[in-house]
Image 1 (cartoon, rainbow, N blue to C red):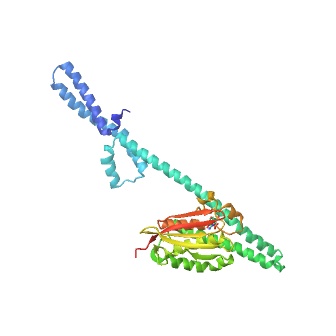
Image 2 (cartoon, helix red, strand yellow):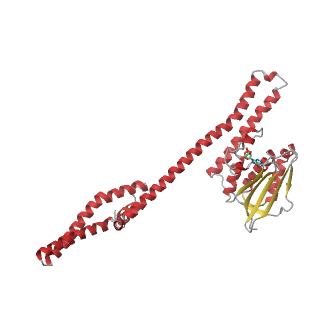
Image 3 (cartoon, rainbow, N blue to C red):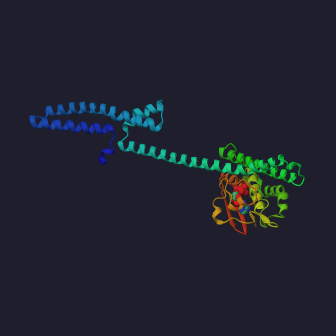
Length: 350
Ligand code: ADP
């Protein structure tokens, strides 16, 4: 199609075609008659008539089809707005604009299809990860309960140990259910952020107290950085940030070394932001895992094969909460040296 025609609306094309026909006939009649009167009449009549006929057929063959295309791509139902679009806007559209509308629609659809494919892949991975995480504790519990029922219950040497192991498997299942509940509530968005102002030092102190016993099991000392400002106030959802701090410190204990230390520091990043960093001197994380540890169910091979229990959901929950606050989280780590998890929060305005 010549480029100049692409920029014309169907109405303008009719006018042009009618003009060409009327002009040709009137020039012909002028050549035969040698007089202006008849050619002018022929021009007028031919122009009006052919414009009417062209427009009529164009409406039938192109207009109605275009209307159908628009109905399809916009998924519209007849309403006043749509009628206005079909009566007033559509006839003015050039072929170029129609082409661009259809291309835009096709691009939108292809993005939607891509997204659906990603979601489908995501759903498959989620299901297979979930199955994998469920299998281990379920089979553990099943194994110990069956062994006990098959007679081990009478054996005082092992019965208590087997029961404790079964109970550990159940604890893992409960942890998995609670992590899953949290993550799905966060993703569904039915767990709104309730902002308040609070001292970050107090929140970390409370968490230290809560996890003191766990830390003692490995003789880990819980400390604050010397320059941590105890008056620093943040503006965030206290309960959710408590969850973030709990998850990070629990990991620092789990993956920490015996007699190790966990240190928390917080600093003012600028007038509006505070940066909180929790560091341990534990096993550390290999570089190739660093970018993935915030993914759901992601556990490094080491932690998977070790006896350290975990769901691989803790850091995914942390990331969700921090991002729901519009803030960022990052990790620095070196194998054998330790890991530092840092995140920003809004500074309280008072
Ligand atoms: P998990 O339930 O396995 O602890 P998380 O989502 O909390 O799941 O953590 C994901 C993985 O990141 C862990 O399996 C572990 O390999 C690694 N990780 C997290 N925190 C630490 C840490 N402080 N030190 C070393 N590795 C860590």
